Image (cartoon, rainbow, N blue to C red; front, top):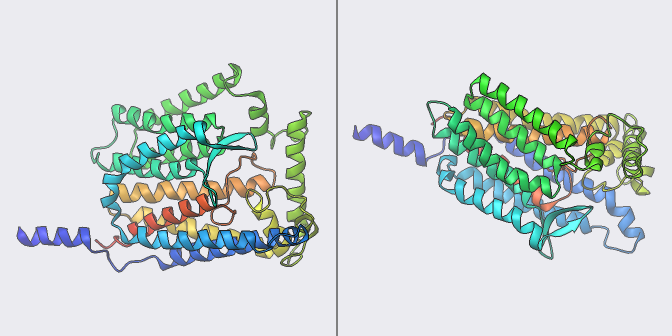
Length: 380
């Protein structure tokens, strides 16, 4: 008996030597490349305006280094010990979302950020990660599976912060939360009849929200603009013009691209928010099809490693953490790149570790650290 207890103690405290170096290196390379692409997309414009051309490189480089450090620290912590932090982090994120409406900063028609001088923090990005941790902890404690009562509690758990995020408004992050929680519930073993019922209710609720004008008309048109690209709404027409420029920039890259720091669309600033939402257009125009395909392959490799680690996790919590982060990462990639190509709505979801942004860098690196923590304990 004593030997068994000692073995369990060692299993809990000592990580195995199974570290997924491929995932770790992939995330590091991706972040460093993203910082460089933010630089390449802004250097000429900043220099022409008389500003420091290295401004965005220095800022994003700082957050990438900080994020890599956070990833390393998180990976060393046994993810099972984070159960104690799941509730405080979830509650803290809820109050942070509520506080945005009081002391937050408004930009581009949305109230999502806290301005702290050197950096702006978007709490909704951290909320996605904290919801993943909370759901994984909740489901990990229910080895017998999810009952209807548990499903209702999960819906309330996700619905409370989701409502605040919709009000900001931030429909992109809202969609991610819905997909992440739904996917995690499926992996956790929610009965199919429950999932079918929730899908029907959710669809009916969305239709009702549209017809009852709970969602503004411009929000609906913005969300469906990629389907109807001939809208007469001036605001939507301007959005579609931006998407047209984004597609033109990607197409102008051809096979090999115009070269780093080159490309008319990038140099002349025809694509809006190119260092953030539309960073993939800078990659497409400067590095061409070959460069873009290489980046997509790297993103796919990272997502694949997250999926594999989730499949081989030894417990429910580790499995759900990895799969939840896999969905978060993968859908963000699909939505962002699809948005620049006009096949998905423009929602403002960043391209993981490639788009400029300190909050997003810290979130995705911390998420990577959680998956690495799971991988380090696959042998335990």
